[in-house]
Amino acid sequence: MKLLRVGTAGAERPALLDAEGTLRDLSGLVEDIDGAFLADASALGRVRAAAEAGELPVLDAAGLRIGPPVGRIGKIVCIGLNYHDHARETGAEPPSEPVVFFKAADTVVGPNDTVLVPRGSVKTDWEVELAVVIGRTARYLESAEEGLAHVAGYAVAHDVSEREFQIERGGTWDKGKNCETFNPLGPWLVTADEVPDPQRLSLKLWVNGELKQDGTTAEQIFPVGEVVRYVSRFMTLYPGDVINTGTPAGVAMGRPEPKPYLRSGDVVELEIAGLGRQRQELKDA
Image (cartoon, rainbow, N blue to C red; front, side):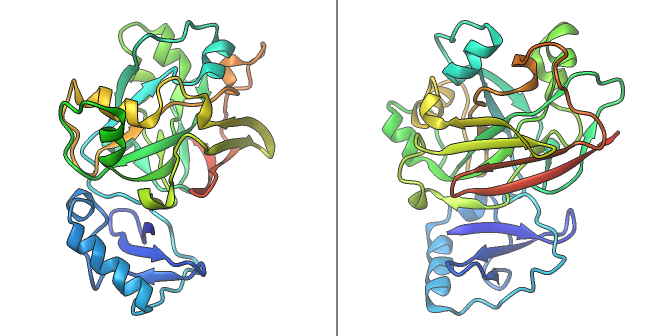
């Protein structure tokens, strides 16, 4: 299933995109697409049955904003330097264990919402990423197979980053990762049954129409199941939590000088095969 949330920011309603590309209203069946819903097998079953029976009302998609596909996110765990090609382009040694940092849930915006360039920014960068949404409470998992079994679905994430804040201002990476609007998510949450192998997905990103990133999750140093297993050894993952699993080569930081960092007026578009497409115009904060 392709699950999404539509409407004005803060007042989104749950919806489903059916096999014919028609937008269907889920608000009569579920309150929201959130952790409680994703953990409820009976609720998921009711939605699936109603969709297959053609019982869901049609929504007029014209002019309707698409919000983040998951509401009430508890935490966003991010994995840094998780692609062999990205490590090579930045001159970094591939990590022996996953590099873990956090983004605050309030960085999440819709897939086509405006991204704000922070005040004083000179190195705002792009990163297309596969986002994993947790569907079952995960703690102390023993295997990558268990990790995959705890995934509710997948989505496109844009891990926008300010490299000066992240790297040159001391402390942790968090200052360069948590600026307002720095995690567009969506358009859909595609349930895990529709993604049989998350290590065979192509990822692409364009800036002002020019292709900048063209990668595949096959390049991940730590695959999705292992990432979920590893993170569960250090913290409990709850339904509705999100893991951003890293970005492939092609970011501005990895390019020759002068590096083409983002500015107000730039347009970024990104997509992952089968998971949909995003488009954001940048403006000054």
